[in-house]
View 1 (spheres, each protein chain N blue to C red):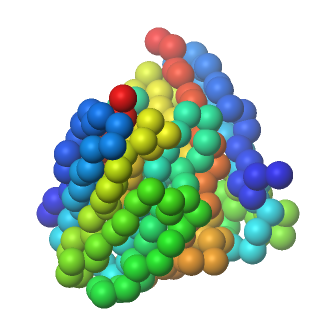
View 2 (view 1 turned 180 degrees about the horizontal axis):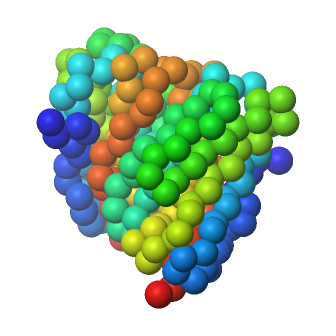
Length: 109
Length: 112
């Protein structure tokens, strides 16, 4: 079983829709990260959180430590939000991140 | 502020050739990492360096060597490239292991 599971793997939405991507993990963590990767591009950190909720523009990230679950929400989605969204946790024994496989989001105009 | 800079962005090697991937950060970070990204898999740790002068193996170190030249630079060397090393390689850094990570733009390596 993977230590970090994301769902869905692929997601297609119409512009303007509310989007939710889920992440569950099985290891003890100190923090959870949401990352964004555009096609052929680098990886950008969106959020790092260890409790509660964070908001940045149209993006909201929540975490429930007891349930070992996090969600990334995108409000009023836009085609430029099309990317792979990756959940990662600070749970590696060497201080490294453990990554989910990513959720590929496509937002159609 | 450049952040994390990786070179080259693209590389094609023949089996058995060697090459070094370069990574430099200008954020005075202590920890640096090399990851590889393969289709259908999450990023996996190859090697990491918790501080200048120290390096340790990650999940998939076979076929690679690293060097933490100074606090800024962390290089990854393939001594004898194999097709199984075809991948996208990412360098990352953070101030310390519990902090936000910053990633380079990636190196797309193809071994034929």
